[in-house]
Length: 407
Image 1 (tube, rainbow, N blue to C red):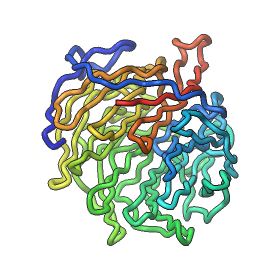
Image 2: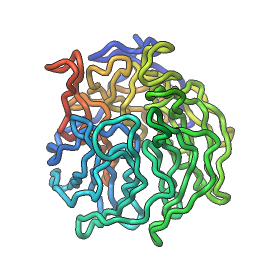
Image 3: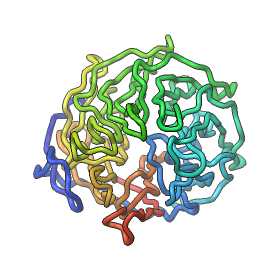
Image 4: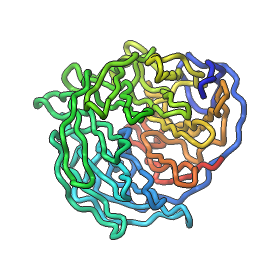
């Protein structure tokens, strides 16, 4: 993947788009999506980067928490069985939550931490409550609370099996949210949380990607700057050193972005894809469209360089590192938030442009996705249509279905 060059992008069915990649050609690639049943519980919206389904050590995919159509935090939990291709309801979370983190542990369990309970409100009530999923019994049990309540944080499994949780936000007053720089580490053996070095920049809604040598790269995100939720995107990036438990600044993104995706590449570099530019996610005064650009981080130099642009911009999408490259799918244009994208793009190892793979069966954004043990990619839930594209203005159409991509 080190030979990736800034290459073509293309046209797509469906929506108006950012001008950055418009009108460029895309090759057609292989692979397609097949139905994987409907979610058996009303989990629909996974707006955060780390709250969607995860793949357990036994090969099943676990979905837990999230929000229903009315943005009420849910305690529902279910597992996907890749063999028969079906979902099964499992034990409920002890606390309904959204904008939490759900992390598959190396010992087969899963950790749900933090998030927002209850109904939609501002500022968002936030908890430090954490619980563990026991795959043998299919039940959840409480574990030690985090040292700081947070939502919209990242959660990354370190090489030694511990979990690094960083950033996020919590209420500061009755009118605004405080963006967090603090970080802490969960030890699954002793079930304890230990504070570690704070990030150099407070951020939430960022991506955190494992690097060679056990380090972790924090990419972009947002920081609350005013009352009532204005959160401009960040271009600042930093690296966590597990040996010293400290963060250090590294090269900044060429374009500030949030609601993006970042995935590791086989050569150790990192690909950042799409997202919202340097503006508030609810204010289009500075840039009206989602980003079509991609960037590649070189771990040796700490510098980001341009990657192959997408055919059009997208936010609230998902990206997955597959056996032969990167898959980008779903999302929407954040300037309008009307229609979920069904399009799927594929960047193969050694290629310099995106290929158009088979589209999703349902266009969706703010959904969950995970790579299964056999290399296939599972996508589930999300929003299909909203506002002008929905049957009734102001109401979202949930995507209760799931589907699997196979090369």
